[in-house]
Length: 533
Image (cartoon, rainbow, N blue to C red; front, side, top):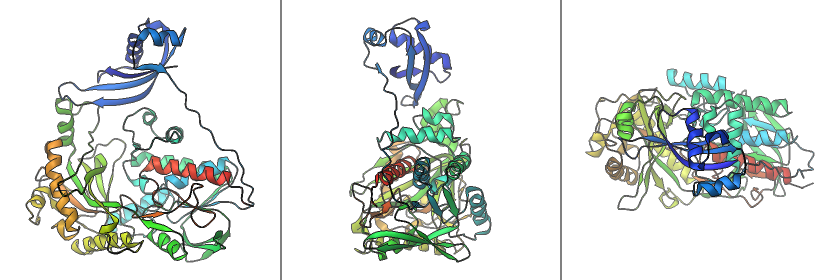
């Protein structure tokens, strides 16, 4: 196979255009190109009057591949390197079944890997299966009655289930490809295998996570829903068992020497328990801010100009960042084209917002988190868990300002920039399903955060014209973009407690669906190679 990069094709491109373009670059007759497989497709929208696709392909050709590569005289042509997935040798000899706490991306891929290795993992998930969980979330939106163990944060699929299902990642691990292939095989759209900005959509994620669960169970694993990890039995600095609590308050012990901890960034009670048990951890930077909403059509036009609405493009996204003069960074995160702002609380008496899109990305608004970095020196104290306390302070303040009904504080961008509380809405209708209370989000977020957000809005408006449009809506607070704690682990993926494997976002080792999934696989590999008796 021959790899060809940076093929430029029109928005109206057809499948056969790839074959013709490949032949042109290879300087050969089209008949010599037997097949072409798309490996990457991106949009070049730098010039609004000339938007086109940039594609990478792998071409199967007849004849001598090396000769064709030489004849092309192009640095965009090379031999393709096939992806090869390799598992470590199975060395584990323990008679005990490994236990996994949490069934988000890290837990799912760890469970799948261990189940395929014949280790029959037991998964404890404090939330419900994805169908029941979806009903729990809708019930919260409609009744304002929060289920603290089954919500946007907790339940089958983790926090990513109610998101855009974005699969972009900054890590370069070769296992990323394995994650994409597995997701596609489990029902995710095939385009994630070649899209430059792949996403699944919250509506399609449900079927994917159910399919993963079904295979784990078919291979002898178990997934126990409504089971919250409440204790780890430790002796001689090693795991000897776990205790979990069911929804009816019953406690159950499991004897095991292996606990893979993939509880997510919002399982504060679990992290607090582990801290009391002597598990080593440290403060970690995180970010806070608000969701900013614009009309979807406005963002589409800002990014695509006259091409906005073209069926080959879909809803436009953006990714912005800047460093205002005082040095604190601000950036947009988890942009949801044609999406909604959702209530992501997991503790009673707190308001948290996040973003979510369905696969079609056709909702009225587009939104993104506008976040500011928080360093450990900004935490309330040197206590390792004080980042959680800062999050709680912000969330509880928002709850009070919203009338203690889980309504979220909101403010028009124009009012925010003029330091004037908002008293009513404008042209942009907030999508937060529980309702907003127009007010002043400076009363919710730390001053150092809102000062940076104000500077960033002005700077980002120069990068994306209209980003700071006066009637855009800021809904606060977004506090759960990442964990404020990292559980320390060694080169064997274990903590200072033998047999405890901190994993994924909640342990501070991932920042999205793909990186968390890869970390789950890596931790599973470490368990497979563990030769403890």
